[in-house]
Image (cartoon, rainbow, N blue to C red; front, side, top):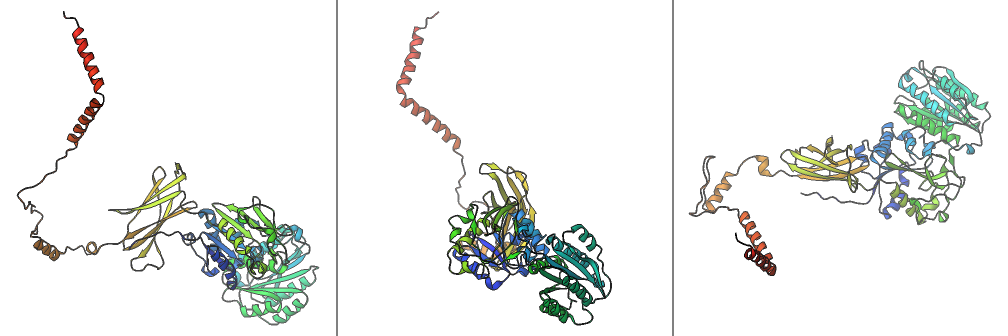
Length: 582
């Protein structure tokens, strides 16, 4: 059994909100020599060790509520600490319209989720109808407060917002007011508490009457409940509101929610129903739904990309030849961000920057059949564009400033890592960590099992060491990392059958001695004597050979310079003859 390291094509993780549409990008990247590993949001890797196997992560049109807080934090740390690449692609459920406002993902993106002020040409009105029954006590009601505040922050000063809480009756927490009064709105939301029964109808009715009296182009209501309600007539009220151009979305929280009723209300009200068992997803659902139905973050009009900056992603790619895109999500560029491509209105289309040790890219249109239909319809620039974007975004090749090797000794296995600051200088005081994975003998191809994680100690200039003891036969893979550098080495541990049994094959040894006319030494005190009369011994001739070589060297010089030797001789004899005697 042996271990061979093979460096393959770049491997990136793709999470697509519409799995049936993922083939457009994966097929194009296969032609470019880039592998995309598709995984649904619910099976996203849950450790940095798993994410470290990918050169980059691509999130395409996935709503924020389908990614847990832990998942978003892992992506954040993957980029910042491991130097991984991250790309977010737009769609009707991405960026701000996907609920990523005030999330760890927004922190690392080169764009902000709020729409440009110049695009807010009309006012909107939003009313949040929140369950405040006894079952909402504790974490749920606190999360609902945060969700209401985050949703209010998304609105402009000329928009309207209201918050009505319900138990058995309706209670106005925030009466309909201008969203520009941020401090007053937050103070009122903070007073929201839980207690009482559950009856959605009074809250919906109060919100309907308030929205109907507001002068706004778009009016929307979000209803949240975690239980089963009393009374009836909900679908009729929702239909009446929809007829008055008021849309209604619903959110069912937990296993006790009446999601069937909530879904029918949303359908009658022209909105969308969300069912979640994770209260932490409520803020993302609120912001996503508000952004979607208030219609300020999405522009669905044909436009041509315009290149305004040079960038390696666009080398040899002519934006003037690109077909039209049919829509995008509105965002605002952050400071220090590179925006090589913009829309016809100057909004960011392709934005890129460095975050921590990694690189992050945002493309505010999509890569599939809704907005990029003309791009995927046989245009060769589609695969070239995405191939260059993904290669530039992906993590840099590993091991340029690190080297790792494993050494076997009596104490087990030693991990030795050399870290370089540059080609001519070592790096000192680095944080070098190593993870040891194991695949059992005879089970190659199965998943690796983590057997140890350790921090390596510095033992010399740029050299770091650690130890582990192989226990079972198989392959041990060690991945060492510091910063964005990651290197791997393998060790095949195969214990011989003799060592495993700890037994000596006496019969085989006896047969061997009989065949060669030898004898078996029975005990430890038995001395081994030579069978032949004569014997040999080792004599070190090195000193004699060195003296011989020195004499030969001096003789060679004398022969080559014989005339000089004669001259020295004559000069010496002559001086002796002319020296007067006493």
